Image (cartoon, rainbow, N blue to C red; front, side, top):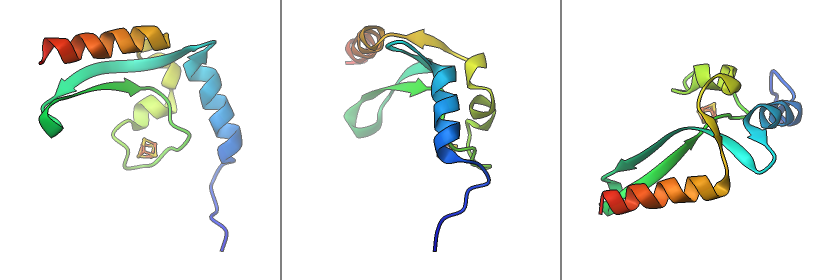
Length: 88
Ligand code: SF4
């Protein structure tokens, strides 16, 4: 039995990519530390190819270009490492 989507997932992925990527940069809306597993840092990216009704990021996924900002991979690594050092 084939899984049926109410949209074309490949087309939507391409549309979302166009909204949250610019060259090597990707859109993120939050960097955070949490105590789980003895201490973690997380970069919350914007944009998902699905629109699950239960998603806590539903509004962000509806309009992913309206929140956060673009970060290069180096900026993401710098912020995650900085957070990890701050909380260690
Ligand atoms: S729950 Fe949210 S983040 Fe997860 S697949 Fe669904 S829309 Fe994407």
